[in-house]
Length: 255
Image (tube, rainbow, N blue to C red; front, side, top):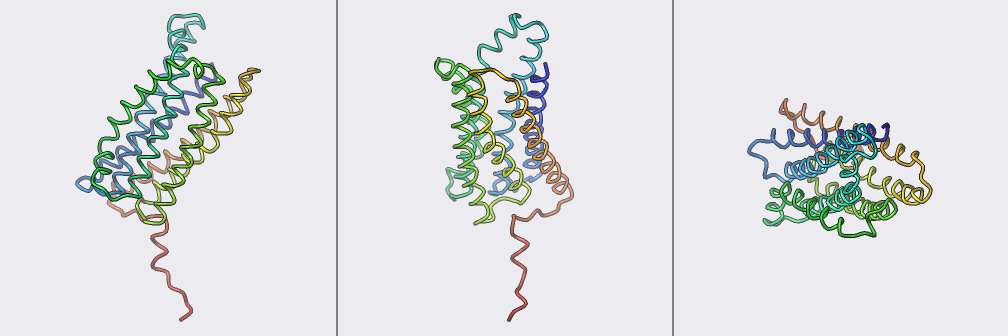
């Protein structure tokens, strides 16, 4: 039962971050077309979609297990859980790509895509789940973990590109930058963790999943704390600078 509790905790904290990010975006009021605010909106959309999906899956799995490993509910959830994990990994790639494009390009269609990101991500995760269900090679612990390791690699690389772009053009505030940096760290660590799970699935050991969920929960808690701080500052009307914005006012003592 402990892995289900860990899964619920880690997914619940990411959902909490999504809810806080949504409130930050809403507090922006009429400035929601600003690129920095749109980045909060796209981030909120991603973590709400994946958070609701993952948390719902964790709740159903825990309920099914409590009824018995042979219960109809647990069997049903087990039939699509691996596909759901891969589908969530695929829309993480999509989220990172949309974010990177938003922070790099100044095109009208990019802003439209950002505004439509909740619908885009929800449709994408549904289609991805249905598609993966038709791929027997992925519907195994080894196949799922291998696919997720590859997608975490791509997600981490795209997020690092987005973070670099944000530094170069001051396109997001420092608290969102730090939150996304923690998420990039999570995805980077997930590459190794999913690889461990993939190979340990050939000789099952629960320690791999325990470690994976504790790391996810810790980083999710850090992201939520940063979003809560950003929400408090938004409520007070305080300006949150970009990562290195304060350094621009520094002057060298040498003339």
